[in-house]
Image 1 (tube, rainbow, N blue to C red):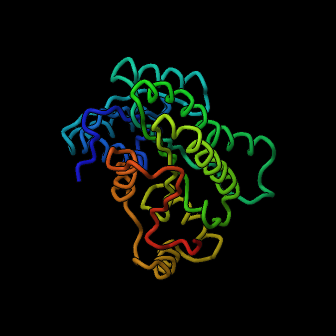
Image 2: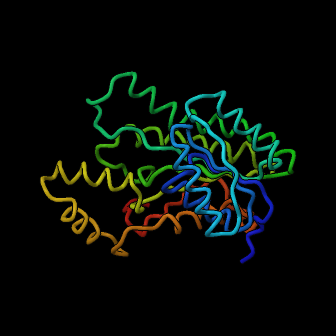
Length: 264
């Protein structure tokens, strides 16, 4: 299938590792002009990811430093992308997950940080990119969240709460932006092999009083496909939804979870 992404500008937020890097890789593989970003403290990781993607795909992304919690950084990123690559056709909103914990673990400051990182940053980035998409006559927005938007995940109350806000934002915007031919969807990972998954599994194994190996074995036994997903599989879903091949899917929440989630 021809996705029609060649030469189109795709902004991939927080994309130096994990799911974000997987998405940026697939976009580059399709020939898109990719802009990657992370906060400056991760610059070595960002440069390494850029060079690896260039080697794998033959298509070298551009990079920029951006702290998702700073409105001025997001504005600077979008302005730089437009000035360097052209108007933005597709935006992939991605960010690190907030701290793990239960309701009793967090005060107002913890909730505020999670809001700024996992919801307000998405709002700001969408707002900044919409003018580009309107100038192009249409565009695509993907909001990456979590499988918790369908079935809550224990010990992740901050993530569970903020991700649902992103779903409400997406559904509402699908109605507001449809007239501009801007399609917007949510994708959520199940258990995808990343450093964050390894960290969370370590926390859960400790709480359960078992080794990480034993916890992983018991967890995978419950999965229909019997394995974790890969960042490549997640990236391919994002690439399709951001492409011209997707011309009629908007306002939807799609999980890439190998059948893990029990909810409809």
